[in-house]
View 1 (tube, rainbow, N blue to C red):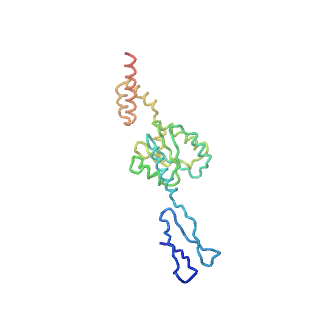
View 2 (cartoon, rainbow, N blue to C red):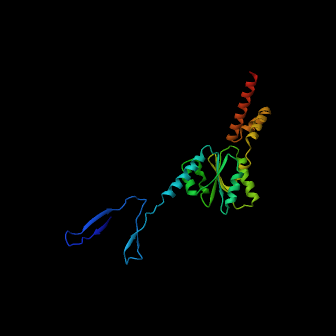
View 3 (tube, rainbow, N blue to C red):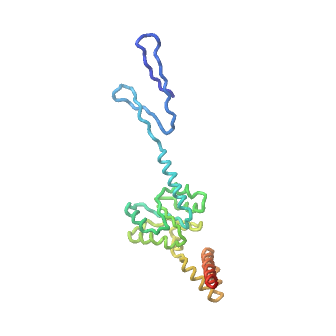
Length: 233
């Protein structure tokens, strides 16, 4: 669309001169008219307005942040934060160990980051207002415990875990006890070493343990044998 500006001549000839101006085609800028209170029907141009480019950039930045924190992540959990104050968030972040990170992000942006990955099992959590706990450690109970203590001290019973994904499996709020009572690495090592030194039945019982626990136990035993072999040289 073209805007026409006409400059009439002071005499009848030559005819009036017309100057044609093309409007800007930048999709991020828009020129609109508004009534002129001083000009009986005349219109004036508003200043250009910036649309949602900044908002879109922020969303993409949030998605990238979530994806970065999924690297070397062992557990991702949602926490209902409705009613949290700024100070409570600050106190909670200070109480978390270094290997965990708390991020507040919209469900839609988090789902965009986890879609097509093993973390997509977290989809049942995508309702309500969630803060997201990223655990970058195999010591799951130790990573969960600080929030449990924070929740208990401040009587935030309604602000519970909404769910979590660990090793590709979804754990609902009622299943968190399984995550919170998992044996620590030291306990697993001790169990394996004890079973290897005891009767064969103990070894059989250990082998029937979950695959993750068995792998950690075997690694511990291999490391012990390597250390003993090095000491004997």
